[in-house]
Length: 210
Image (cartoon, rainbow, N blue to C red):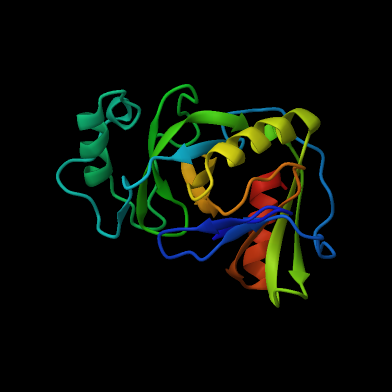
């Protein structure tokens, strides 16, 4: 998965998504106002490089909530190895993570375990998320727009983290973790990933909280 400029992000762990910065395609979903932060609102976190585990049901007993938000690198590594990321499995931490601490989380639609840094941008800074068909790319995409403050934070983050991943986290689970392909300075961000129309629409709805 990738973001592009409109911004380019590409999703890792088997998801070819990107974020980039081109002209936005016509949206399929309506605009929605940003929400106040709550336990199940969106948060943006950086993925710790080379710390993900793809596949498997974990090793040994499941990690405690404290271990999943530990500052100790050894505990973080153990939690990534132990967490059960079988798709559809209930998460006991769901929506109650401390955003100021690291987080070991599962992908919502895959079986990847991620180690994430503390939140750098709250989802309340997203003003709109829509799906649309990009004629130039020949695929369905998700388009994001940020508030003026969110645009500044996003521009700073993407400028410093090209070729790194940004995780979109909801309910302590990773909705997507695209790779940043370019610095995104104007807040207009496009996520690509070989989506079907339904997948693009659902991701946009999840991001904006529809």
